[in-house]
Length: 412
Ligand code: DSN
Image (cartoon, rainbow, N blue to C red; front, side, top):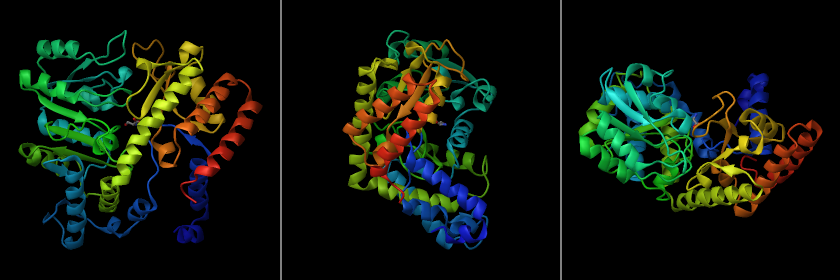
């Protein structure tokens, strides 16, 4: 597949192959990452990248889009089928622009909206003050309960009734528990607010029925396509028919220009994979693996935010074990184990050096690992954290990790 780059640009070829090796040699625990199939990779590196197709199927601003229209229509139809959506837009290039388009379709600058705080599991685009969302709109932030570290729907309801936002956003980036989307719908209906979700993290679980799918009864739902959904790095928006025109106009011409049709082709391939019965098994194994990993880490004495997980991700409060988030991320990296430092609810550190690490099981599950392997992963993590200042020991663990990963090669 890569013969031409190899001949023409050895430097980049070597770097691409080094990255593939890093992915295969290590334990990838970043919960927002996954490994795409070779079919998705092939579609990504294919001919539709050459085409301008501003507009939508059968309504383009460029000629020659007969084939592209078929590709994009297939992607749309498959996505609608996957989530029982009334309408789908597959053009957003990434999660942040998808959220930007969603807000601009529903809100005017200065309008009041509500989203979860970044430090408690929300995303920058959910109203953080350094992000366009917090600058352009009047975002009120809700949080999780201090004791349980769970969403408190009564408290959220009270805040919504008091603040009367025009839009309430649910769906998060670092929340390890199931979300009661039906409760959000009820709360929004009490004040007539737009009920929207960003399901970027849990999309694969929602598609497979392993987590409640809000798409059929929410107004608008955004998602990325590369996390649990296991597609190319990209995004999509789904909505009820009544919002279709507003959403489409917000994406193009409102925000983006020529759609990345090669990525849309890759999304179509991934959506077909997600419609297959095996994907349900995959998604349910992600959750079983996350639970097994959580239990093993607890058996080593680590405190987990909210006491466990219902989905694909786990937040470990490493500060409770006397380690800072940054220190934990670095030590694990030296042992070939990849995660990201993350804030935890009621954070006492900073986003740059927070109290937690965020881990998850989508990649390891794609590689074929099951509950037993999660015990081994927890052991390696514990060994690395316990020896975080011992460079030679971390290097030894890295060799063991590589050996362990050899039985689960995904890209040969
Ligand atoms: N950066 C993504 C994540 O890691 O969750 C969200 O945008």
